[in-house]
Image (spheres, rainbow, N blue to C red):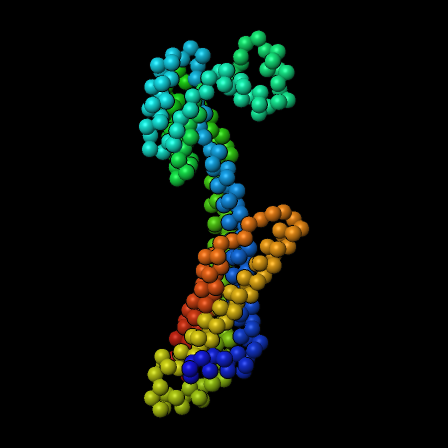
Length: 284
């Protein structure tokens, strides 16, 4: 109770400094929240695209049915493969007419079916990555009756590059803002320590340990960090509502992410306070 009373009293004694500390923590977490919102929606979009990642193995016209069956069995037996579907020339033409109606007249006028037979290799959800796709493509391309193997290498590479870019950008910008917030929290606590240096000296004379003296400041830092987390949550949600109402539909981040942000803000404030107090108590 003593630590809590002292922490609340510190907010009343220096509202500008404590408010600035909370605001900087909130700004750092707000940046993380914005990138988290963007990253989460990017993840949903990329997951929807990943579901369509498949390998198409185009077969030569003279490929024998026994060879096709053997390739279908071999590829289907790989642990990363969810299924292999054989598409005949007739099925390929019917599918093209349904998906590309603007070319229906062109297909109807052709005397010979120009589309090849193929094998469509469907991957398991946890195996849709570049290494697995390239390995299965190389194995499928090794059959002598295979004409070509396609999986959209260019956009698959971009797909996974976008994931890495989003994660790195969030970490760098959020880390920079958190560093500034830590410096401001440390400065605010140092001012508070010097303002109360006589009181701290008296507490030491009557036998108070550093842990007892440090406790209110740790709680003050945690409260400033938690307040910053609440500010970040509010601003992030307001931004989400504006984007959803006036720009385009986006999904709100999971509740677990919000809880982690609030908890992270409190822990960060306490950690920054602890590091500042440990150094400055030695100077008093």
